[in-house]
Figure 1 (cartoon, rainbow, N blue to C red):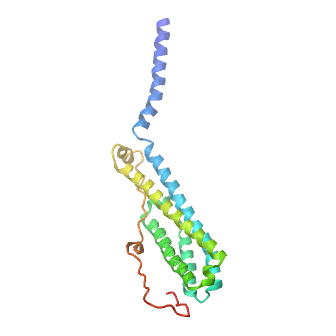
Figure 2: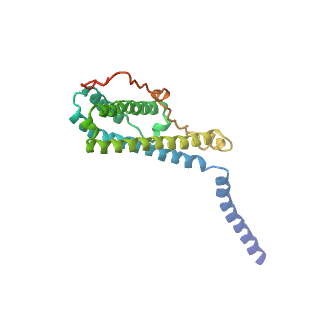
Length: 216
């Protein structure tokens, strides 16, 4: 009887050890790496969206302030308003990061908005009253801070996404990517916009005029 009990205890202990060992072994071979990095990429993507939304929220007040001092710059003001509308109309969610077409549509809309915002900020140099307006200066500071946050959020997202993409393609995690996580797709990466590939042209040859030139 005692031998039977001892044998039973040994078998039970072996089962417990097996139950404990299996998860530890699976964790050690990377079974949780793909979903963990997938979630990290989605979190980084959410921060990118958050910062772009912050910028979009600043724009109406910025446009209204500039309009109060430079209403004649209606082409630029209209372009900013329309670009903001286009950028905010692009619907995105967590699935966007694995959808090349939708991701590029979102990035292109945001890059377009960045471009026209740059034109809007140049206007201040032509209107001293606007340049010294406290409300404009505060909005300008917030916009600059947000642009910096966008740059950081995009960089962090790219780093996280690249790490995740590498995991999907390298051994031994590749085994899990081809079997248990076969539905996982690589994340898209932000690329530098076309405008960022060349240095801006600055022309100091033309003398200032009494009437501010119209920004095209």
